[in-house]
Image (tube, rainbow, N blue to C red):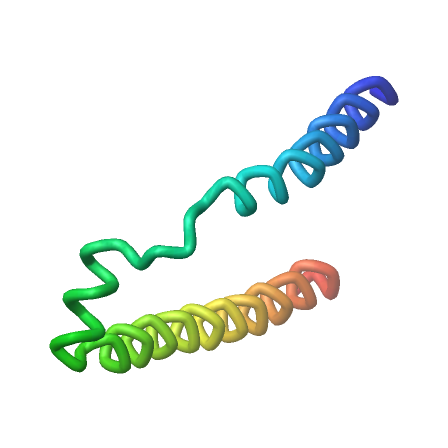
Length: 79
């Protein structure tokens, strides 16, 4: 239905327009968690763990995409 696409586009536009207001409303003072992690020298560890998890997710998605592509080709060929 064409009107559902319009509603989705309007929602996405509203979200994009509201996002900067949310970011400007934040203060620049670091929170207690950031202060404690930075003071203990664990901030780099947290960043490294998050990076490894994200890289792992990307690799998993790439392998899943490759397997799905092979399965789709087998279905198209009828074998």
